[in-house]
Image (cartoon, rainbow, N blue to C red; front, top):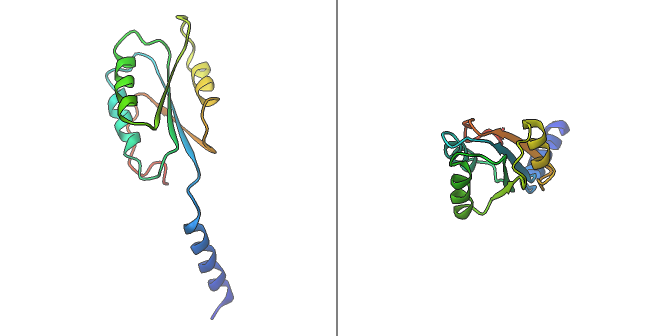
Length: 123
């Protein structure tokens, strides 16, 4: 038997037994009521186990915040953040602020109007 094949097989078995790497999803929202529920559904349907979903709202003036609150009540993975002041923040500052709150070893960024395939994070 080729020793390289044995080593490769043993290495594969070890990797399959390791705990998944903790992944945080970071999503920022602003007036995303038409899309945010569907996007959260696709994130929650991921085949890879997620550590958390951090959603930071930039003081939306539509129903985005209410939709987010409903989802957070139903799904303990979702952690909501909202800027304390009424001044709008640019998208980069919003994502940076949310990213700094994430606890995962890896962070995946989501836009409020994306739709993810169920294996997006697993890939």
